[in-house]
Image 1 (cartoon, rainbow, N blue to C red):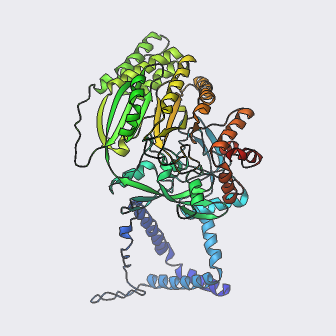
Image 2 (cartoon, rainbow, N blue to C red):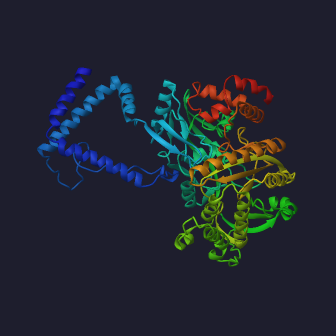
Image 3 (cartoon, rainbow, N blue to C red):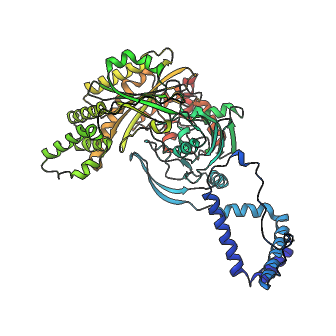
Length: 619
C-alpha cells in the first residue's frame, strides 16, 4: 500500500511539474482569500442559518457537466496535466489514508500548533508583571486541546489569562500561560431562549454590542467591560443590584478543556455538582473554552446621581435597596459626602422627563482644575501646567494628577477629596441610556484595590450591617489618618449558587461589596511608597473589619500575605468559608499534575498537607 501510494504521488509530481507555478499558487491564494472573506463576514453563527442549503460549486470539467445550451470548452494541455495530477493525488491520498489516517491527521494537527513565545506581561493596574517562558495563543478549540494535553504530558505549568485586568495578577505564571484572545467568536444567539454561546476569549463589550442587535443584553455589567467572558465568569465578577446575582449565575453551560479528561461539557443537568464548582473555577479545573450565558431583553435605564450624607443614607437605605434595580454608593473619605447613583428601567414606550444639567462640564471640572493650578503656582520648582493640557484632562485624570503631588499626605488627600465631592455635587442630575452604557464606571488610572463581599441580610429584610461596615471603615480611616482617596465604592448583589463565589448564598440573600483604593503615580519611588501604605491600609481592613463582618476578598483582588503566619491565617479563613475539600478533589481529578495552578492560588489554596489540615474547619 505504501509503495502504491508513493508511485501515485511520483506520477502526480511529474504531471504537475508544468502547472504548479500557476495552478498551485492560484489555489493557495484562493484558499487565503476564502478564509479572509469568511472572517470578514462576521463571527456570529445563528440557528436561522443552520437550515440553509449550501451553495453548489460552480465550474466546468470533472463531474460537473456544462449547462444545457452551453458548448463544452476543450481543455488546454496545462489543464489536462492539472486534472491528471489531481487524480493521482486523490488516489494516493485515499490509499494512504486507508492505512495511515490516524497518523496523518495527528501529524497535521501537531504541525499546525504554533510554537510558544516569550513575553513580558504587566496587568492593567500596573501592580504585577511576569516574564513568561512559554506563551500560547491558540485560535481553535483543537489547538487549545493540543496545548493543554502537551503541557499535561510534560508536567509543565499552563495558566490561562484573559484580559490581564485582575489587580492581583491572578492569571500570571512565569513557566507557561495560554491566552484565548484569538478565540473570541460569538458562536450562537438563541433569541427564543434568550441565550448566547461564545468562545471564552470574547470581550464583554463585543458580546454586548452584538446582543443589542438582537434585542438582548446581559443581566448586569461590572464597572468595566474589557474583560473576556472566561475571566469575567471564573472570578465571580459582579455589577450592582440587590436582586441580581454575580455574573457566574448567568452561566447556563460551559465547555472545559481539562488536562486529565480532555474537553468536557458541564451544565445544571450535566454533572451539576462539578458545574457549580467550575462556574467559579478560577482557571484551576480546566481552561474554559466556551460559555453559554442567559440574557435578558435589551433595555434602557434612567440614571440619577445625587449627593447625600451618612445620616440620610442610613435613614433611606433599606427603601433604596428595594426601590432601585441598581444602586451604588461612592463614599468620599474625610468628608460627610456620599454619591448615590441609582438606575432603573425605562418602561417601554415611555420617555422620562430629563431636566437640563445644573452645571456645564467646565463648571463641574472647575474645583479640580482650580486646586491643581493653585498648587502648581505655589510650587515654584515645578514647571507650569500648559492650559491646553489642563483643559484636556478628565475628572479622573485631574484627580490622578492631584494625588500624585503628595499621595501619602493625609491633609492634601483631604483637599483633593473635597474637590472631588464638589465635582460630584455639580454632576447631580439624570441621564438615559442602554444598560451596557450606563452601568460602567471610570475607575481612574493604575491602582491598588482591595474589594470584599459580606452578607447583609436579605433584600426584603436587610440587617444594616452593610452601612455599619462603612461607618467602621470611615472611622478607621479618620482615626488612623489614612491617606485614603475617593471613592470607596459600595455595591450589592444577591447570592450565587456557585460554592466558590464570595457571595455564595440562597437567591434571596443580600451581599455587599466594598472596595478601597490607592492610585499609583508614575514616579517609581512614589509607587513603592504608595504600595507600602496600601498594604497597611489593606491589613487594617483584614484585621479590624473582615472577621467582624464575615467578609471575603474578591478573587481578582486577594493578595498573598508576605509572612508565613499571615498566610496560614488566610488559608484557614478561606478553608472555613469555601468548599475547598470538594474543590481540591475536583482539581486532583481534572488536573492531577496541577499544571493549571499559579503562584497565587497554589499558595492560598494548597492541595497537599495544608489543605488537609484546614479541611476539618469546613465540617
